[in-house]
Image 1 (spheres, rainbow over the protein chains, first blue to last red):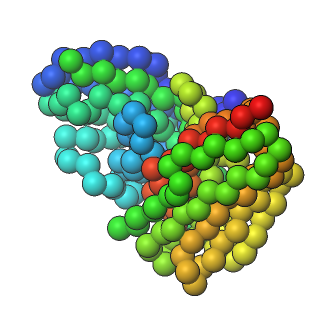
Image 2 (tube, each protein chain N blue to C red; image 1 turned 90 degrees about the vertical axis):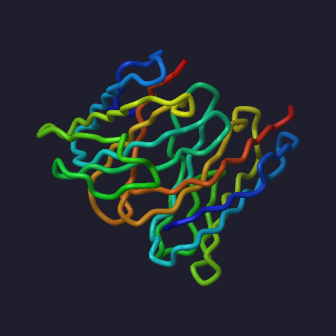
Length: 113
Length: 110
């Protein structure tokens, strides 16, 4: 098992609401990346946080935002939830640099009804 | 941006046979190519990776090859076992911003 933990593990929200997901990075890692994994698909890169700033973003709208804290943990915030936001949200912890290993948390299963 | 394609989407083999999964990528700047195994309801787990300065890497029954010129890389599993059954994802990245393929569901029949 990795040292990457996410909370909560499951969440049900209503369309239009806002949600915050949390990720604690592995000891020694300083970078957190967030991914959305729809059922039966590969993880899609949302964004990455390094030195408490967004350090790269995938093709996701601005209602997906994040934070990184001094202890390298991170939050993913999604505003104005849509039904299509229902997915498994994964964070991956790594040490910033070219081609370094990334380890995933167990994910948060978000259901929007 | 980077685009990763993965084939096949499903693969069924007999126990003991070999399995090969292939991926192509579009961004020549990508320099790190990990492979993840994801069992049902679990997190993706890194099983092997390769960097762009290496053409081949092997770890017991698993090997990965990289052809930078053609921009494709492959996962090879030999002597497959039922516990190898899972979904396998390839990815390409430069600074940990991994772009994943759509996945290959591997079934190893006893």
